[in-house]
Amino acid sequence: AMLTSLTDLPLKKQAGERVTVLTAYDYPTARLLDEAGVDLLLVGDSLGMVVLGLPDTTGVTLDMMRHHTAAVRRGVKRVPVISDLPFHTYDTPEQALASARLLMEAGADAVKLEGGVAFIPQVRAIVQAGIPFVGHIGMLPQSVVLEGGYKKKGKTPAQAEQLIADALALDAAGACAMVLESVVAEVATEITRQVKATTIGIGAGPGTDAQVLVTPDLIGSFPWFRPPFAKARADVASEIQRAVKEWMTDVTAKPAP
Ligand code: KIV
Ligand code: NA
Image (cartoon, rainbow, N blue to C red; front, top):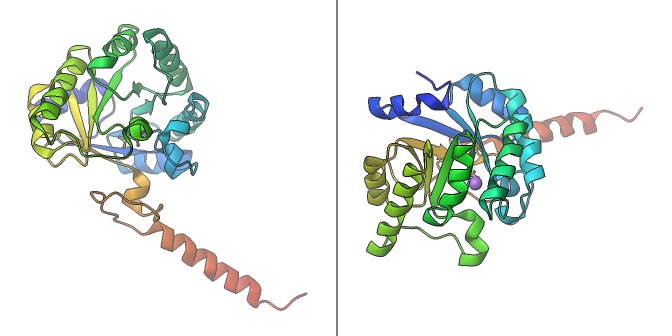
């Protein structure tokens, strides 16, 4: 059955039922995905790149996230909504909690931040306030400038051990789910076995409890960049341009009045 509450995630995991997660940033997309039966929506800070035209996610602000979270909230009747805490809005536990509260007020059902062991005080502050929390480890887009690019994680034994430690720490701190981004498939599968939380994979192989995609990658509405693991199942970009050109031909073919 499709998910109606985050509290049902453990039931899905126990039953071995796969969970579907997609990003949404606006009212119509959120409404369409809710009606289609997707289990969870994520107002990701990928917003910055695929909607706002920024070079990476580091320029996304809490105000931007609140604005788009509110639009998504208005579009959904059933599906739970996770919202991303942007770069430098969770540097301390106090700031993390204040930022999380603002996203919840805007309409989120849960919040997500990027990091593992080093961010457990922030995670605990959020969870202890009763705010459902989703982790995010592996390749961390908010660290792209610092790291100098997007890189696969878990290739060396040391990296794999660090990822498992991060996952176990998030699990113990009360995360209900965690994104595993660009993690070596074997490591993602091992984490999935070891944690109670629902693992949400992206570029992390088939062994996670859930899969997430950036919706524009799935529907082909952002054709200028697409990660290799995301198979576009529609070509919305071409369809938009076809309709626009057809209409322009129609308008310009009419004789001037
Ligand atoms: O911002 C985003 O869309 C995300 C997903 C890729 C997990 O964090
Ligand atoms: Na994100």
